[in-house]
Length: 240
Image (cartoon, rainbow, N blue to C red):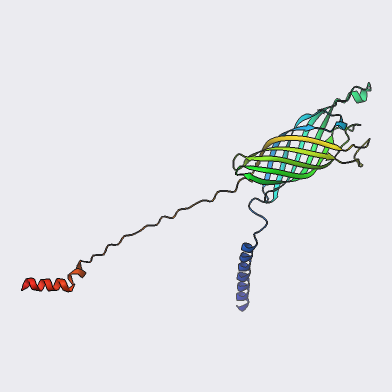
């Protein structure tokens, strides 16, 4: 019995300490954490000059999760077919390749900074990789650090529109840059689309009004008035 009482007292003490700690130090995770987001977008890409590829339109999708409050860890994949803009060489092997497919992978952390009730500033940083469909002399596969700047417009509690600009700095050659060395440069992009998530404005507090009933009590003082000395004296004079 004593052991049971001691365990109960220790558990009560631990719960009270945890409550005091929670109020003194707010937890890192909030209701906006670990919430998934999915979306799709259209993309315009301008390649660096050394790639000999024309600017092109493409499409892609994204999936992400809010690791911390306002911090979104996301993965994007976009696809486009770019036209080759180098002149004809007379070689059938090279001249037959007039289009190059480009699958771009992007891994980043994006911060959502509130600007207004329904507008958020997007600032992201991560890694981008261009996976071209065929090995070629002027566009070897590769990637490097990537940055993102954009805006999120909240449409309702689940849907938002995103407009963004990206820049990917292509790093120098490595073992994947075949058959020739990869030139450094900057690929620029602009993209816009819709995202579905549970991360929007925090819900407005609900105000509940309590109804208070006031009861008015009226006391009958007629009996007390009859018992006053003045009333008794007046009755005696009237009788006499």
